Image: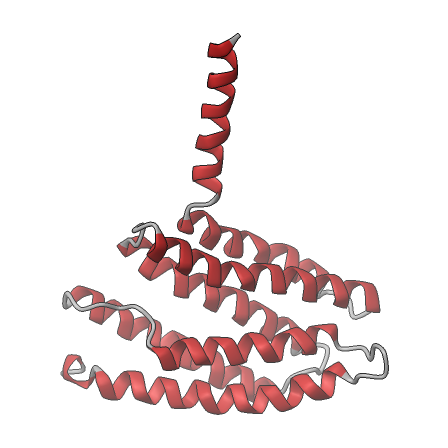
Length: 196
């Protein structure tokens, strides 16, 4: 009986170790993208609310995977590369899916995603040179503003007299400015790697 209970506890502990591992949380964000895309095919109140809830849940894991990795010494090169890629996939998918609904200007999305692709390429060079490719504080601020603008844009419809779309649109302009600023900062800091 004791062995049976001990065995069940060991299995539960192994499952928890896998689920709570920072790379598992990162992969959850990647797995959330297809569901987010399906929800965003529609623009009714329910699908918008569910899309915002899904996006928020996935975005929260971005904080927890970093915290868990640092707290328990689980920082890995895979995590350093996959974490920002998962963020970019989640954010880019949300922005792209908002274009057909007319919620965001396409040119803004092009600038934001263009910056993400350029910095991802630079991260590859940084990683190959043996330097740390982790996101800077400015890069994390950029991600924070992007998430902060996407959530109200996804909610889209007014609730309790609050126009979430207008809030999101103001935050979108701030996110765009910080995105450009952080991209320039990244290339200036690592300009020595940009040899032609």
